[in-house]
Image 1 (tube, helix red, strand yellow):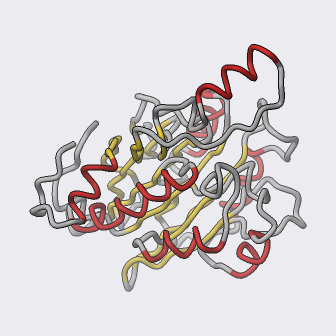
Image 2 (cartoon, one colour; image 1 turned 45 degrees about the horizontal axis):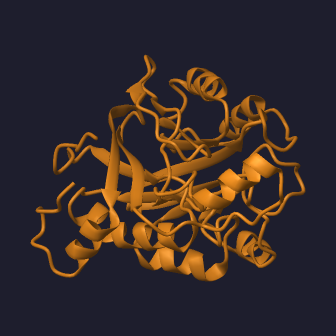
Length: 288
């Protein structure tokens, strides 16, 4: 885990993407971290992948409201986007949630969002869905290129959440968009990768940000049920686990003038320390 210098340079913007929030435990951790991100990390733009926040699959309006109240600016989603029926109205009306841009054209939701974080600084956020071991969708690489072609050149800071299974696909996306976006950060596998880097064209990259939720689990689900189902082929319910709650996130410092990533690092925070901080821990002394 790498902590950035505090505070960032005035001509840089610090952005955080929180990895897949899983169920109520993950929501609790993400909500608790909002204050720490703003006050201690000095982050000005907080993003999160929230496609698993409602019972482990989907999102509901109360989940959205809690994240917004905790200081998050925008949410990305993935293959579980429509698992909850009530998400459709939310996706049709909220301006700070995006669906994967390579879904069919008639799909509910926005293909990118523009977040104004300072008077003269905006951040464009995109989502794309991979195809390996995923639902059939349009080509994510061509879709992302089309999305970028529609974006004003004035919006220089651009963050891509590539929600995909294959690390090779994620690397292809990073190389394809190198120099055109500020960061390509992967989600979906729920396992953080240690390959954070800045590509030659100035794009920050990481194959997967990781999971925010219960780590005493199998990617967020109850261990016993997943193991038994694997051994017996029985269709057992995979309930969200409850123990060892942690938050996984990646931060990037981006030049406001050029949109290029200057620094990138991973974070792993435990819920007890976050809640202790909120309860009155002296600022700057959070144990990591």
